[in-house]
Image 1 (cartoon, rainbow, N blue to C red):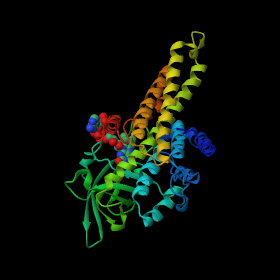
Image 2 (image 1 turned 30 degrees about the vertical axis):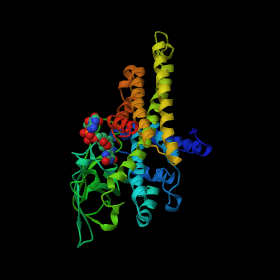
Image 3 (image 1 turned 60 degrees about the vertical axis):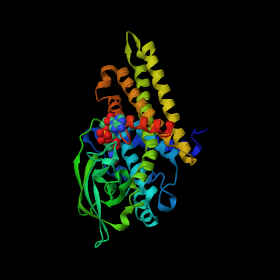
Image 4 (image 1 turned 90 degrees about the vertical axis):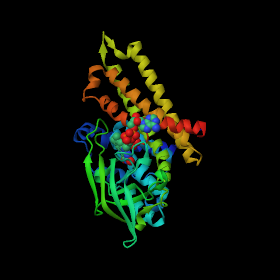
Length: 382
Ligand SMILES: Cc1cc2nc3c(=O)[nH]c(=O)nc-3n(C[C@H](O)[C@H](O)[C@H](O)COP(=O)(O)OP(=O)(O)OC[C@H]3O[C@@H](n4cnc5c(N)ncnc54)[C@H](O)[C@@H]3O)c2cc1C
């Protein structure tokens, strides 16, 4: 299978790399410390097409595919994984769920503004009692005949982009007692009475990407904002997650690449015992393992993206790619810190941030343990 970049994909990679180097890299530390990046960055990324990578051109997007989205994720992740996470949640989760479930009117209403970055999207599946196990979802949506809509009550935790999202896709129980077979998805617009942003998490890494609680209190959502079929919201969410895992895998590859590049440069500059530390066998072996892991992770993630682009089954490869790449991201970032020695432990160099950021990729969109469950179920067909 050939999943190397075409000329067009290479051009996208170059464009995003330049954007990341000039518009993001100079501010990485500042944004990490501020736990935020300027909202205007979304609009700038929208102008470049990064907010609507897979939204069809007829709705204002750039109409590209999963390989190109992976390239975007990798290039942003190589410089600032937080910005990449925000773009992943917007494109992969919010836009991704709308793409899976929306009718024509919903696409026309939401895609054009989401594609330009005028509107930012978030996605709420996780709840305090429902993390890996969505069957524990407690947010309720009750039909109100008189008002011709749904009344939502509950809370969603860990919503990436939630603090400034204009559009949230949230999952809520519509038929109690059926577990994941009684959950539906709804599009909720910011400003809807009863919808509000709660606590913002103070995180280990990915700090510039906001992660908040979303609270729904007697929040009325009109009938036309049901996304997809009633009670099939979680079935659609699984499709969204399968696709999203390719993005998180690609983001992890970007983290590994960024940490590897920093370590390569530092190992050649830093002298101890009268020579560059890169001349020591122990450091060379680390660099070799880091490079081989990064390359293999990239191959696995792009393989999943290629399968998806070709409309072939990709669930197994997406989970394998996400599992492997996220753990490689962690490994490479940790080894990079080690190569930097004490300087790896302080904020003057980028590797401590890669180390903190990488951890999220082994947790979000299905933990490593959940990926192993998905993979083994695919292998054993049960
Ligand atoms: C920064 C950040 C951003 C996020 N963004 C979003 C978002 O935008 N939208 C959203 O909906 N969610 C988001 N999440 C939530 C994320 O997807 C969940 O944290 C994740 O799915 C795990 O759920 P949990 O935290 O409740 O852990 P739990 O499910 O409680 O898991 C705890 C531990 O138990 C393990 N475990 C659980 N079940 C099993 C099992 N069956 N077998 C073996 N081990 C198991 C897990 O692997 C983990 O190690 C985000 C989380 C973070 C930290």
